[in-house]
Image: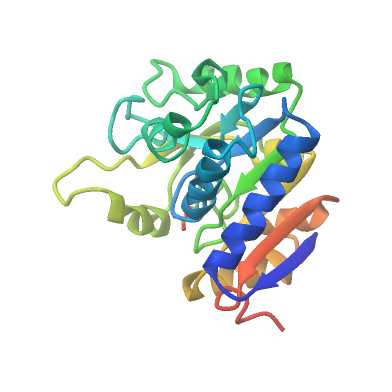
Length: 242
Ligand code: F6R
């Protein structure tokens, strides 16, 4: 694992954008693993700019998102499919047919997990996996005590995650309590991993990820076992590191 500490969130997004652009220039048909949430938004804005200026193309890219809420169809405003379309896919030259997000409305969520995991394998595996980190150390929706060998499956979200994500839902709106997530084992299979964390609220989780023992208590600590994982944080998120 490589740790990169930068001054602020803008510098983290700039670093991540350069990392993605370099990846796509070296391998235009990359299989990208993508994330939702607030952490990747500034990166996605930069990638949109780079694409629209003709500096990078996504036309041969395939993507797989980490996770999706169970109970939300892709056209639901809070679904991660909708998020990806709105924040990235609608603004770049990617072929939407090659963008993949688990189907949160699948009649059989467990079968959907098996199908999704197989689809990633059939595509040849993830070349570059983007991650955020939960305040509780989760990656994807692999909550604390998830098996470090886990594959794509249904997870019930912890109270801490439901609370952290309630900011996206209206007070009287249905907020899902379960999700389909790729597993920690699935994530560790990616050839490269880039985790972004900014702000003081992530400092404890970053400490567990970087300096804690490798333990299911902090799922992100599993990245210590990855040969090509880069953890990019701003000074606030790095503030509890020794
Ligand atoms: C999102 C995901 C989550 C988030 C994490 C951080 O697809 O899998 O693990 O990356 O919850 O969320 P933000 O970036 O909103 O703080």
